[in-house]
Image (cartoon, rainbow, N blue to C red; front, side, top):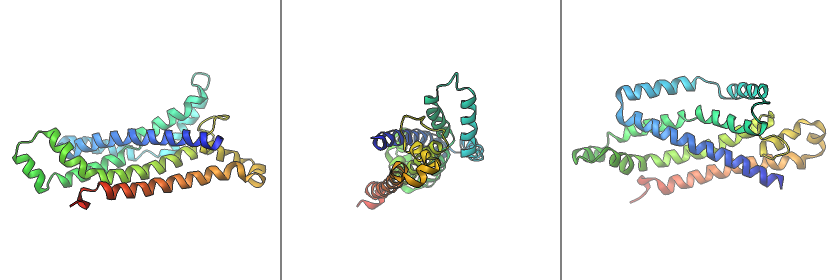
Length: 220
């Protein structure tokens, strides 16, 4: 029962983070790639600054701050604050990917034809550019989902995740810090580790399948 409830928590948090940071990345990367010039320069410099931030140390610092204010901030809210912070510093990869693809695609012949026909900007972006970016974006999302599951598990293992007695795959592995449980009760922590590995593999396989199914270049 704890394994199933923990999976619901871990997968829900990871999926929410991936969806939000993908939306941020698509929006800002699309704006940078389509409009270029000073807009591109400004957004890419913000991306460079955020990329300089070490993710795990920042999460540990935020976790320590939240512990210091535990009387004001409930312990149950800590994981949501940490995952929100992770969202704010993890959208840069998607933004770079979308920007690079749009810079390439907007020079193609069909975009020149769309420009010559006087099509509106929204039509060019959502009808011509976004569908051609989706295959790479889906692969990026599935890989990011695996990374977010690992981040949640890491935070749980460091006792910064979902507080006990609530379950998540991360805080179930945290119990393995007890040497007796590690040695004599593998049934407590091994299944959650196996579920993490299987979930990451499954999302990667799904991403590969969706990329092939949605890639416009694969269609005749």
